[in-house]
Image 1 (cartoon, helix red, strand yellow):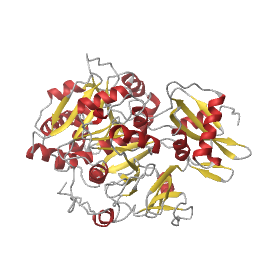
Image 2 (cartoon, rainbow, N blue to C red):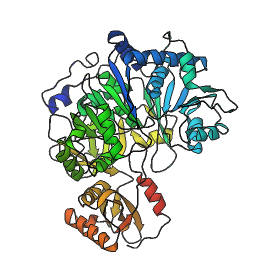
Image 3 (cartoon, one colour):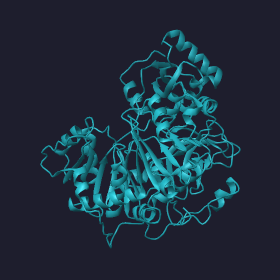
Image 4 (cartoon, one colour):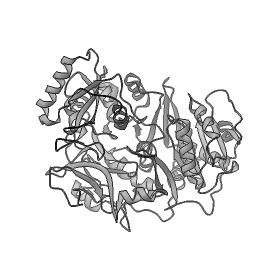
Length: 562
């Protein structure tokens, strides 16, 4: 980290905001400059600690990652992958995902991480949109079935590599299909660094980022992107040199880049990986005991479930700092987790397109419900519809003013790949509109209210889902909830709450009235949910983020009594 930041420690947030700088070497390539450097200088330094639902732990050093990524790079080149080629990865949290990402870096190929939940039409769309040449997937569940179904439709695919957990089952596909594990095992471990390797502003990563409308957009990051995550890892997640950091996320999401590889390795922390099929709070606690992380990050959903478990302080005894991202953490959950563990969860905020934008840094007290203060990398502001700075307390659009030109932040995306319309909508000159909304208090703390599309406009009021959800979470019957808008001919929209009940509670008209009255008492009365629906579970991404768009889409077909 010292090689990239002329100064690391700061006296105050103001000092940090004014003086923090990241120096990016001209030909930076994460695999060579970080991973291989560790492997040469400190070969036995721990890089990865992995476990599954049987809590069988495997450990990898940086020397291991170098050797395995060199072998993987040699295999991929032999299979026809070269600089600039696009490779889709559906490897869940197998150790091979870390190795393969480094191999692609060394080749200069472009990694496209993808969720294991994608169906065949999702895979086909991504292959055709990004000109994907190869898919590497794990033979687990119905992943391979969906991939094989897509092969007949995807026009650009040249090969498939399958990681088999058990016995290999190489099915004919009309294109070469490789036994990934066997091919890597048999590959030469002597990798020769190409003279014309990818680095700097060359494309490194493409993420497909789904919005509330239209097809997913391709978010393009270059080889400087990993260094932008120094602020994510060191100053927000507060990873420890020689420690172990656990962020719970599937490898198909940008949260993986945020918390499971780049900034953590730059800052000297090993990565902890809990490779699970489906989140279960009791299993999560057991995995934490097995992995012994020193720092921990998870989506708000995980914290909400953990505090409802029979959790003991000793369960988090190894953890020195905890943080949350994906969705803001409700104050009620913050306070309960603190009472159980003594850990104050530090909220942070950002996007697939960015590194951490706003966070609770160590120089100021956490205000539960606030996502903190802006990162020094970003000239961030809350503005009105005319682009003017909002007064304190006024909800507006969160924008980045230095998004283009020589002062472009390290870690900010280059743009939406081959999508002029999306770029035109997001950028106004050097200003990038994140599409997220929030407000700033008198002390500079930012309070997130929701996506622009999520904000509810009822009878002239603008209501953020998070503030209603926070009010609901203070009632003991609410385990999880998602607040969305339902169209209304008189009010324009009304507030609807979709609720998962805690154990021991049963849905009823009486409970609905009680919850509505409770919200009126906790927050401004006009925010109360006129509609409440009880469900067994909420739709979520594999990273734990609630998919409010799925709820809204399903509600279109329903009639509600208001």
